[in-house]
Image (cartoon, rainbow, N blue to C red):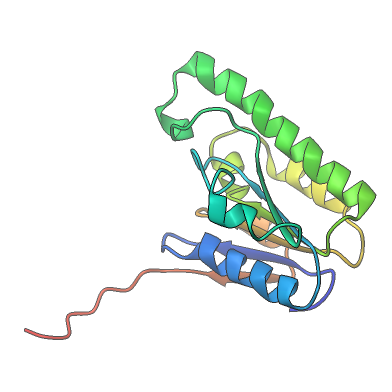
Amino acid sequence: MGKGMIQIYSGEGHGKSPAALGRAVQAACRGEYVVIIQFLKGRGLAESEFVKRLEPEIKIFRFEKSAEDFSQLSEEHKGEEKQNIRNGLNFARKIFHTGECSLLILDEVLGLIDNGIITVEELKTLLAGKPEEMEIIMTGISLNDDVCALADNVTKVETMHFKIWE
């Protein structure tokens, strides 16, 4: 993909985040720096010892405090996590300002829209601040026309089941 593109990996299938991570490894192999901000992932990858070995080329951040899935939290705890998530979005703005990476992955950011944490308009405003040369990958399950309009490229991931032997 090209410099400065905004891409979306979406769909009900599994593999969106691994595909984004694959793009991160490709960028790192070219000597570029990558920042991944994970949302709604529970523990996610940020605490993995393996992932720490990918630094400094690939850095993964997670701002949520809970190890539980967001949908399983109490309303009070969801309110706390929403503030932590907003801190993650503010960190993305800081990344835009500093330009410290060539690829920024906002993993499961589309889920923030599904959960009513942000609106499509807020995501659009966030993306308006990105440097021209920075590539962005956003992942999430749901997709609509307004979200698609924010991207240069949209990839839909679906899981297909085949019965090979009977």
